[in-house]
Picture 1: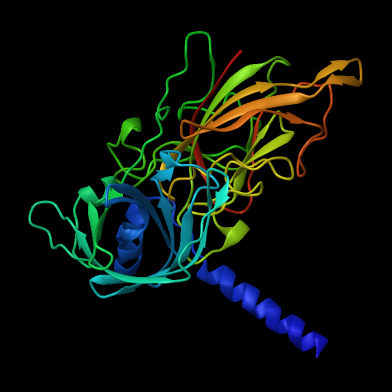
Picture 2: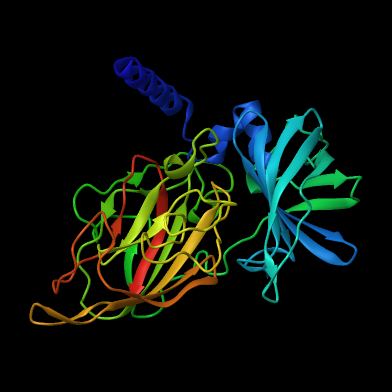
Length: 376
């Protein structure tokens, strides 16, 4: 029986691995109608209900099925803060409509627990605007606007509200290195990285750096599994841009997993955690150390930013005399405020006096990076 159970588990694991395909640019998604429909609907939404703002995350799980999170007050980092009221549930695509079942509510206001309804069911009509006379509705064909993000509306009759899709952009996206900064990767070469780092070759001819991630075919990005050559052992700021792959069939740690190991010792997680709790093993978290103040993860195939202010541990010879510290902004929002590391996080190098660089973890997924620089 034990052997049969093991074999069954192995077969199931293999099947899940096969199903969890990975898409690294929007052109791949556009080529498959079922993928295109779910991807177009997935994202961030806002509605106004009786003068109150309600945010909504719709997370694609494949095959017309979604998870849904409703936020009272707005979207995370923009009107809603961690711990404030929200509702969790599921949604399913049914022709031109999407049916929501919100079954779990939680949150506090002014320190008091908020009692949420036990269950809310609602059905919304989906309208997807298409450019130049393209077909609306869920299955309509779109042109270039698909890659920028087609405007989507979800009209719910009861309770009456209209959710409109949002396309947030990090305020530090594309931030150029300031005077005196050290460029690590600008898409042209790997001079600042150890052997083994790989550039994603251009997939769309005639597409410049500014168009990355908008019309499919990411150009000259850096694949995960890359280690920068050692930095100087002193405080610095570091800017990192990354894009999560689209893996609707995957779950948990198998969903576009990587990590930014500052000083090769302290891992800031990179994971498709769009719409999740925001734990220390999810995007923006430091594993076993600290969860982000708010989960600022954007949907996959959207360029995102980390901005670090890092102070390395200080040593007197081989003896540590001060712990490392870091402040982090994710997509422009503060998620860690001068947190302290008692030791390294698991998975890479032990703490020590020797200077190291940054490690972009390869975890079996095709996470991409660009526009990396540091400033001492």
